[in-house]
Image 1 (spheres, one colour):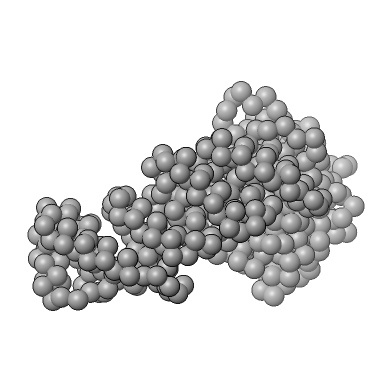
Image 2 (tube, helix red, strand yellow; image 1 turned 90 degrees about the vertical axis):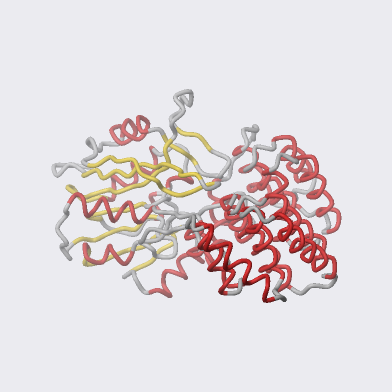
Length: 449
């Protein structure tokens, strides 16, 4: 359940048909801790004792807290659930009655009160107290019906409990109150697509079609249609990428931490495993550098690091960090946009998930690599043998590529067999690991390309 809230929280921040970015952090990211700060210290300790299977200690401390009297709404919620799990039904019922009274009295809550309800629901979700979670999410949405966060949390619990008709009705009511705008419709279609609620996805995408007015909107709509297996006449990958990552730049690093994205980690691990000399003689290209999350570990391998990205706003974030010697706006599929000269190493961390066919990009990489130069790449794994093309666009808005397709495409453009080819967890989606492949291939030292 924590994964349900986590993915939707990320979606709130991005507001785009994609939930993830083009690169990730240089250290393993983990899911954020539960919002324990809103609980009294003794309540947090009682909860920790229960989770450590120290039931008698948890019960003694919980009873002591209850005897002390007044407590905040989050504390009462958690203690009520704890008491029920500790076979103290009467005390649990009394505490929850107080909670119900407190919820009923919240009529004009500020952002803090709504956040407290949602954060408490987050804690209770880990305890699998789904009835209580639903009550809190419903009340938060009643108090702030036009707030996207309360909408997300209510949709998450309703859909998790297979109450799709009500979830769709709640979403449509939200649209009616908020102008039925194109962006809202696309946003809701994205939410339902991650719960495989196909009728709701079709409903909101059909509504979005009738409100699509600009080229950018068309690009967004077509990408989401394609990601959900619906036919489109034109897929403007370039326009979609620019739109997403320009909007993504400001809070990009935080979003990737939420998703546990490990693209640069895998590149760094590959460099370490191959034991490449840490020579400061190389000219290195970070292809799709994003906000500069690879720059730190690349410095030990390079005399010059050049970062390129399709998003100007991403490049501005990289420039502010100061990790690169040179930055340039580049479309990796257009060789004419690459910086001049050859490179001794190219790294491409969690970028090619936004490309379908890879022959053009691999060919471009091959042409700008010096003989003997290294290419290190991560991709997401397509494991369905029925995908004959070797790649497929998924509901996450990211392409997955089959290992056989990678190897054959590398060979077609002139690369030899990779020196390193490994599977590993690339990120999380809906609290489940998404597997990827990291490979390192060296351009032949005798090369006329």
